[in-house]
Amino acid sequence: MDKSTVEGMRAYLETMLTGFEEHFGVQATIGRITYSSNNCKMAFNIAEVKEDGTVATKESEMFKRLANNYGLKPELLGQEFQSKGHTFILTGMNTRARKFPIQGVRKLDGARFKFPVAQIQRAFSLPITSLF
Image (cartoon, rainbow, N blue to C red; front, side):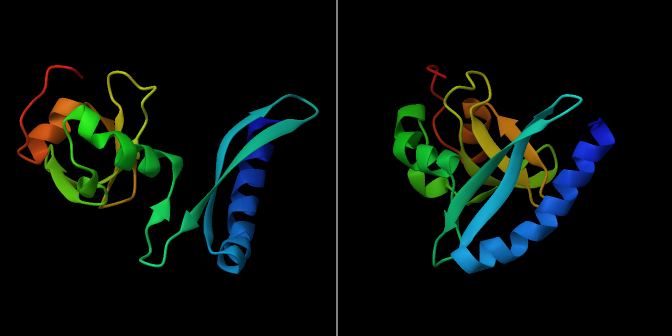
C-alpha cells in the first residue's frame, strides 16, 4: 500500500459512512491511519448526535466536565467567538494538550484549531487565570 491508496480508501470510506451515520444517529469520522506495504490500520471515532443536533464527542464531554477547573464555563461549548479576524465555534477540550487544550472549528470552512485557555478567556471576557 502507498499513500495515495490509503488516501483513496479514506475518501471512499467517508462517503460510505453517511448511511451508517443516518441509520444509527451518530457522527462517524476516520481518525489516524497508519500503513505499511501490506496493510493499514484505521481509527474510527463514533459519537452520538443529540436531539438538538450537537455531537457528544469525548472532547465536548471533557469540556463540560472540566471547564470550571480551567476558568471557563461549561455553557460556552458550542458558542461562537472571534480570534484573529475569524469566527470560531468552541467544540471541546483535550486535557493532554498542555499549551493548547481548547478545541474549536473555524465557522468559514470547518477547519479545526487549538487554543490556549487564556485566549478563550479573553474572547469571552472572563478573568484570566494563571494556572493554565
